[in-house]
Image 1 (spheres, rainbow, N blue to C red):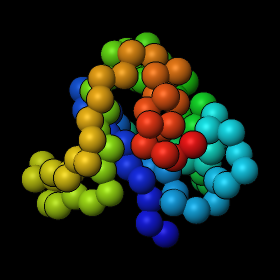
Image 2 (image 1 turned 120 degrees about the vertical axis):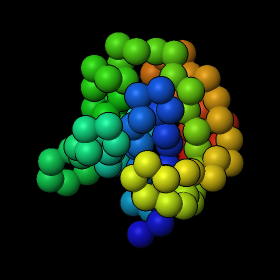
Image 3 (image 1 turned 180 degrees about the vertical axis):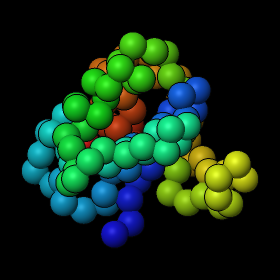
Length: 106
């Protein structure tokens, strides 16, 4: 399933928002997956709610974040390079939800 991807550049985290399946939900309750690229860790099991991903200490305690929105990337590992469609400095969780709204994803 295609997804919308958000790269938190400074901490090298990616949050994946599926393109389908969140219709009718409030953005905080969107089902997402994430990847901590530095530690190569993802959430265990099924998708989690976006508010739970954004409450992880790596994100919640390190604002502001430069967040890049992208659909595709090239390379793997150290050669990985996302093709950002838009980037924005996010200063809070509320700012991330506003970014989703600007992109028409909420």
